[in-house]
Image (cartoon, rainbow, N blue to C red; front, side, top):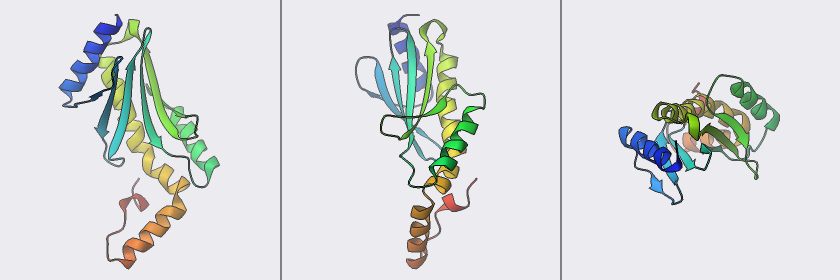
Length: 157
């Protein structure tokens, strides 16, 4: 498969999922997936000469308990998935995946997108509770003081 064919596959899968990505040019698109717990999941898709790459910003640098957060992410990486957690140059947590053009298909691209969605939703609240606990406690206190319901992240799986 060449770049042009891979780009057509990407657009076809996005269309089948009713996702209207932003075209960034040079065979790159930015789309947003809708998750259950992590409600908006940005996804950058890049068709390159030899691979199709997908990346998604998962969370910023944790405020606290870094070791616990990174241990959780490493355990998640041990599960079979087409994507894995990594840190970018600034220390933000990202999800990454890639498929060689020779093996790229609509089903494979759908699996990459599904991997980002699943890993994001299954991991988001645990990372928030570990890496941003103090912030969440302050937010919950503010919500209680203002008569608002608790943020569900405090009780979510």
